[in-house]
Length: 177
Image (cartoon, rainbow, N blue to C red; front, side):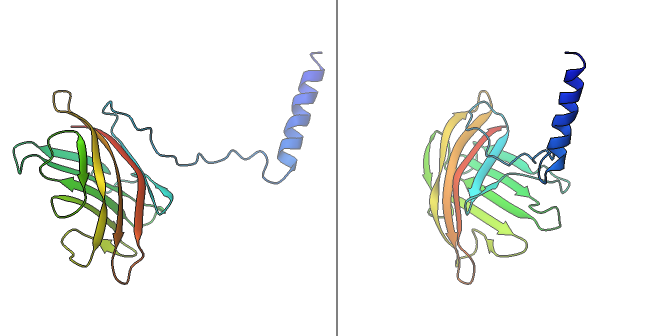
């Protein structure tokens, strides 16, 4: 039996590496982070059906949250960026709101609740651009300033003449202040 095991193991390896595509470990597929409420410092969404996660480093964190309870009845700003193809191309997703001081749904309707998307290779969808049409909502599911945790979900659509529409779904974040 001891002599048979090495032969079987060797035969299995030979078969595994003899066929195209076999023996190569797959690259882990990007998946959205779990929708947690523990301050895990996670962020992700689907942009036009594709997973979008913070990735890369430009000298600042690729994921940051700021919250000021004293300015404009609570000012929330969540920023994330990524380098999607390991080049100089960079994309940003930004969620912001004022008048945010509790859990709830904050519809994206004006500059009080805003979402932005930019891609250095294509179009920019900024809040100060009056040609950008935006719909959607930021939902705060946990708002605990004592523990310093803000968690939630988001979805939005952005459109602009001359640019492809951006549809963001399945968005989630779980941040520690």
